[in-house]
Picture 1 (cartoon, helix red, strand yellow):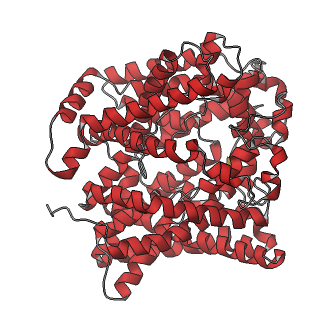
Picture 2 (cartoon, one colour):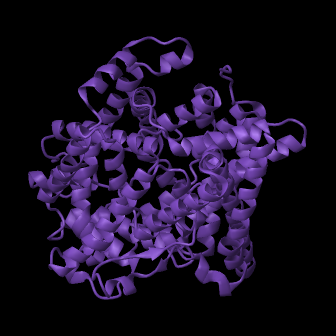
Length: 616
């Protein structure tokens, strides 16, 4: 086995600074327009690798993997997050819940004029960027995220040895571009070309020709047709290629579990609820309701609580006694070198404790009437952070994406009958197992590419502040062109209202939403599925987390993934199953890179044309 090499070099740093500007430009737009982030990372890695090869000094696999991790560490959504904070106080949803406005330390007040100015250079911006919770606390949480990521690395990489399919795609991209193997390069180039040509119709033509803009929509909504047979259901198909790609490499059991979960919730589940007149959603629903509205109201009134319970069960189900014993033994050993010191019990415990203590201090200052302080918020932070971290680690290792509901801490206030105000606007901290990307995934990538994991961490510290500056500059340009959210940035127009509802509904607690017994039904559902699968010696955790991922996945995404699987079966039939399996990650890497490249051109065309029209 080849030795581990470092990937943080002067040229990889300079390349990443340049790429950070490009990524902030592309991903900020894609995040608020189509809801897919990091769409261009593969394309940029390909360009960097090919240019370095053209100039006679090819990048190594270690440098490429470090660049890829660095791209994942870019804080491209920093500026968008600041706008969303202001948007909380600037939309009609607040008044529909009987709320005039939120306090200044939650959302910028409308009378400041910041949101209306659509400018980060507004005088109030200084108070946003210099607030303690925007500077110090995120840094502490990042270090605590490293501690939970180390735990996931030990459980899912070292002990469970999960496959991490998406990481294998990343590793294949780095190895293919660095080794220059002729067969892999040919397959990669062909896949790249196919995806690029497809992307011309999806991303480039809609940017320059109004007649094609319908193609660029998030999905083709077929809900009206399906609701003829299943009232309350939502259904559709998306034209975006990235949604097909998981079907080309994920195990069939994962793909079908996600599809079943999505159909069970958004088609048959909604139909059952509406037909039987259950919950407020059955009263709100009307025939022809589009996917975006069904997503907002059915999620709030029907699926929020059961999915919370199911998610907590899945996360904590990983804490089997045998696993805990091996984790403790692993952390207790002193490894050699820097990495041995990183993966130690002290780096797991100390940052985690510091973040929780600092968060308790904020709660004490803002909401001294918080119930059962400090024991209740501290226990919540520990249990939920741990269960969410383990759920995300299991999902990453399996190759699925899960969406964690926001503000689940408010459940403890509902349960205690809290009658105050400020407690609803604060949150016991929930720590994510991320440090410039999920730690377990990055460590798996370092194994597959024989790269230094420490160099990944160094790149994170260096590129983070630089990318924040780029994020503010790019977001300012987009904000100057059109309001955010708006029809010009369609995903934000769909997703931001849902996020606002999910945030403020806890304050007014509309009837029919907070059914704690329904959360317990989610826990019982998880147990009813997990226990039989476990005793039948089936991959219980993998099936359950895939079902959970599907439940939070809208049908257009699940259908596209299934279409991708059928395309995979055709490819296996025509070129041979073994041959396709040998090169499937090369194919996926090429398709992802081609899609990213075409989307980058499309976004550039959009920005240039709108800037010309508006005279910016």
